[in-house]
Amino acid sequence: MEKAQLTVDLVNWIQARVKEAGAKGIVIGVSGGIDSAVLAVLCEKAAPGRVLGLALPCYSNPEDEAHAKLLMDKFNIPLRVINLDTMYDSFLKILPCNETTPAAERLAKSNLKVRLRMLTLYYHANLMNYMVVGSSNRSELAVGYFTKWGDGGVDIMPLGNLVKQQVIDLAEYLGIPRPIIDKPPSAGLWDGQTDEKEMGLTYKELDRFLSIGRAEPEAKLKIQTLMAKSNHKRCLPPVPDF
Image 1 (tube, rainbow, N blue to C red):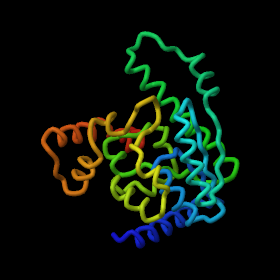
Image 2 (cartoon, rainbow, N blue to C red):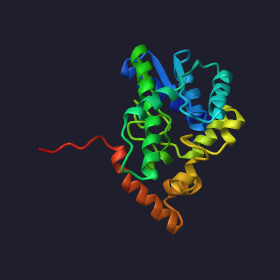
Image 3 (tube, rainbow, N blue to C red):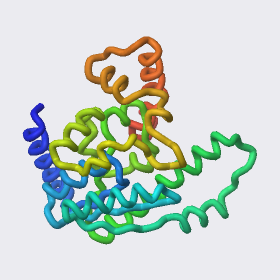
Image 4 (cartoon, rainbow, N blue to C red):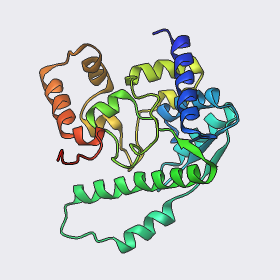
């Protein structure tokens, strides 16, 4: 689909969902990355003057906050910065962390950061009667590269049918600042963390498989395995059929 028409369609879709929910506006988490940048601009087009961006650093790279401010200043969208370091530390003081492995501990702590962000977004949404709009794209959703009840805990996902390259193309069209487009995609959960390194796949490989069903055997197996293991993330909790 041509980028101008895609923009119009996404803006109209967001407007319709906000209206259906009876919400007054939109709250989004602005990470400093490309997905939330594209989402912020689309939401501002859909609900001018009724979008609140929250930058929620939690022992994060300062560059992420700087990029979030760069974006929101350029498009004149309100941004609040709420540092979650103290909240995160308070949780860790009362939560057990024994009889585990370093890898499991890092995963649990990383997911805690993301879930604290979800809590903060919904706190503001409840106060203002706003919708929480999430920035996950199709590539991430397909392989479960998101935190259940974290960045996956939102009301709507406008980018959920776009593979990563489509998001990049849309960013170019919308005029997202170049430093945001060019930096390696990362959830920013620990030093040196990148999406592709953590998934063990490149977005190019993943996008190609999702778009035309083709991939090298090793990549195909990896993608299919991740899809199967993460299916529970994309579904509501199962209930008995009796």
